[in-house]
Image (cartoon, rainbow, N blue to C red):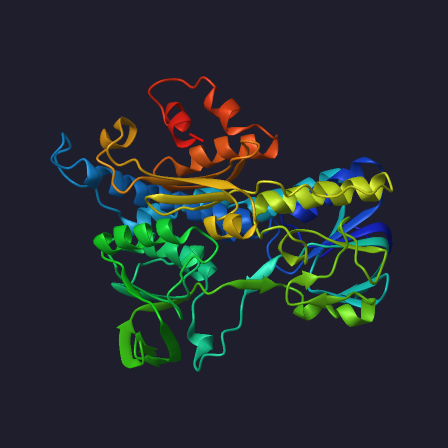
Length: 455
C-alpha cells in the first residue's frame, strides 16, 4: 500500500522506528520528497515490541518486589500479578501505534510502503511491485534475534512473543544471559512462574560490572530464578504442549520440561533481506559499515542509523535518536556532524535495577590512568533502609589527576535516576567535586551522591 504513485524521491528511508521516523519527518519538513518502507507494523521495535511494553510489565514486577521488601515493616501482605490484566494494560500503550504512525506520514506528505525493501542498484529500492529511486537512502531497519545454531531453534519464542503471551507458563526457560533474559526472567518470576536462565559461560551481563552482576544474580535467586551458568543448550524439542530443553551444565546433562523457551541470547543487525551487495553497501556482523558521519563507506548516497549501523554506539533507543540527528544534519546541511557517544548510560530493568555509564573498573585499570575506585554497600543508608531494600550497591571510578568521573555502576531501585546524574556530569565535563557540590533535595537518592565521589 502506498500513499503515492511517485517513484523518484530525494530520500528513501528503510524502517519506521525512532531513527527512520526522525530523519524522514525532519527532511520532509525541509520540502524533501520522502518515501519510507517497513515490512512490519509501522512504529518500530521499541514502542511496540521492546522497551516500552517491557517497562510496563517490569513496573508491575517492581511493585511486587517493593511490597515484599516491606512485609512485616508496616505492609500487611504481598500483592500478586494477574497476567491477563497486566497484558491488557500493556496493550493500551501499543495499540494504535501503526495506524497513528501511518496517519503522521500521510499528514506530513511522506509516501509510505508496506513491504520488504531490497536494493536493485546503488540508488534503487524494490518493494513489492514498486521500484523507487532515491537521491539518498537511509537504512534504519534495526536488529533481530541472533541465530544460535541449536537443534530445534525454530521452537524458540523471541522477546516479542513473550510480550504477547496470553497466559504465562508455569515453567519457563530463557536462553542467554543478556539484559533481555534478565528483565523477562524477573517479570516471569514475580508473576509466579518457575524460571530457569541458561547461559553458556559464567559471565552474564558481560557489559556490566561483574561485582554488581554477581550481587544481582544472588538477589534474583532469592526470587526463585534458577541460574544455569556454564551451560550449553544443545537441543530443543516439543512434547505435547511442553518443550524439552537438553543442555550440558558444567559438563553434566541437564533436561528441563517447560511451557516456553525464550530467546534472550543477543540480537544482530537486520540486513539479511536488503541485498546490500546490489547497492554497493558494505556490512559486517556489526552492521552497515559507516564512517564517523553515519555514511556508508562504500556508497556515499547511503546512510545508516540505529541498531543496524556498525557505529561505536550501543544498540539503545537514545543512540538511534542521536545518530538520526547526525544523519539529518549531514543530509540537510551537507555537513560532517559526528554523533557524540560520550557517557552513554544503560539500565537493566530488573529489581533491583542495574545501571552503568562509562568505564568498567577493568577498563579504567587498563587505561593507564591513576584511578580511585569507590565501592559502597548502601543497604544500611537511610534512602534504601526505609524501603527494606537490599542489596544496594555502587561503584564509582574517579581519575585522581583531574577529578573527573570515569565510570559509575549502580545496583538498587534508584539506579535509573542515579546513573543519569553521573551521565550529566560525565557528558558535560563536571568533576567529582563539582557534582558532589550540587545541592539535591533531601532526603532523596540525589542527596546521597556526594558520598559516592570522595577522591
